[in-house]
Amino acid sequence: MPFPDPRYLVAFHPKRVMHFFTDVLVIGGGLAGLRAALAVDPKLSSLVVTKDGLNESNSAKAQGGIAGVLAPDDRFEDHVADTLQAGGQLCDEAVVERVVREGPERIRELIQWGTQFDRKGDRLALGREGGHGRERIVHALGDATGKEVMRAVVARVEASPHVDVWRDTYTIDLVTFEGTCRGALLWNHRYGLSVVWAKQTILATGGAGQLYRETTNPDVATGDGVAIAYRAGAELRDLEFVQFHPTVLYIAGSSRSLISEATRGEGARLVDRHGRRFMPDYDSRAELAPRDVVSNAIVAEMERTQHPNVYLDLTHLDAELVRTRFPGIAAICAEFDLDITRDRIPVRPGAHYMMGGVTIDLDGRTTVPSLWAAGEVTASGLHGANRLASNSLLEALVYGMHAGEGASRAAAEVDDSFTAPGVDNAEVESVGEPLNLDDIRNSLKSLLWRNAAVRRNAEGLSEAIENLRHWCRYVLARQFSDPTGWELQNMLCVARLMISAAADREESRGAHVRTDFPDRDDRQWAHHVTFVRSPRNPEYGCNCGKAK
Image 1 (cartoon, one colour):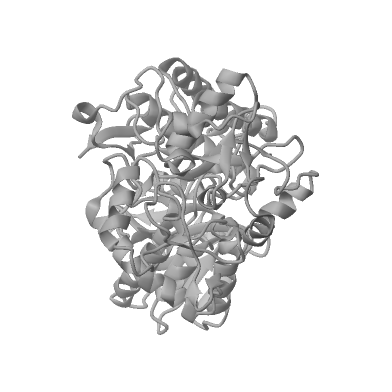
Image 2: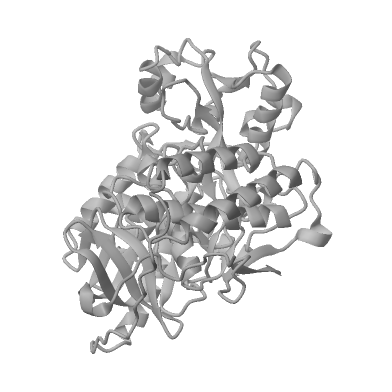
């Protein structure tokens, strides 16, 4: 039985859908997407489409802040070195240099746009987080940086007449013709199925944390951008590297709320169920070690003590400082009768950030002509095998700007004689009984959490691949009519590639930890695992390669 690997998820014909035209189409309404739209020349038209509102993204939920060399005693070289060390020898040094050196200018730009970062007197207040050798994290509203940054950027977008925004609009697929991206196939309640034809398209859809049962990510983070780029023929890279945030609130009945790394930057300690501080046993940097180190230490302590979590202890810190610096965290914990100035916070790791994604070059181009990308959906080379704390919003700002400017220049060179090529997709025969999509989705999330989370091994990954192949055979063979089905198909697509990459990489590096291959192997594995869709190979569905 051939393995289903559809190019488009739904049936459509140009004569039976609405058509819209724009110079630059931006898919995704987080920080990377909005910064890209703002970089488009005002003489051109740009359209931002987002499957929810502009405040429902990882960008808006970010607590910690933005890393940047802003202190008088800090140096670009130090930020670069910290980033490279965290990245496990898979960072692109040219990318790291560009992002770090442009970072302060992008932060100052946010201030000019009205972002109110926290201050100490007349200077920006700078925090410190794991993996950073210096205090260089700007933050806002104590522990709600993303909320304040997005407020200012959204206001800027809404005041820009050349930028239109479609909220509550689901992107089903990128539309390609003769190998070039020509726009996207969209769905919303107003127009139903429609095609937006664009001279240039920018993908900024964020991550895929919802593939895991335990995650800090909002409901929208289902890996859609990675899946639609894969179906369009773009190269993907580094999908085995998923960062698990060490400290996620773990209380029955609560959402899995992030407990910011900035708490540890202010002196919070990790203790086991008996109150014993354990991080100095694992790393000389203790609680300020990189996230992969801390996550693995927590899992080891949970196994050693046979307890479902560890605890974050702020009780030794000044109570007024804690309440002022972390008002959001204090409010969340208070809902469960926890006073973070007196009570330890139960925490454990949760899926947080994808280092891998769509391969892009230094300016944000993908391997598909006329398709650009920025933010967490990409594998830019900044993060390597493990992202340094607070480098994500920084990347979104820098690459959002470059992708927007590049797409704008390219769109300006294309004339306005839009022609819709003969692109369509046939309807497939409906087969079988209706599926319980929620049950499959929950099973998928549990499978990945069990077999491909903080620690992996060949046996668990093999089990995961077999389950995924089985589910894909009957889920990908169908054409659904709403986002619930399309999201599940995208999640299965991305999960299969992530598991395949994790099975291929027989070593431990950064966020990818193989208990059956516990050592880093630079001789065999100091390179990237890449994927490109191959319809000629239906069983595997992709060409997997290793690139330097």
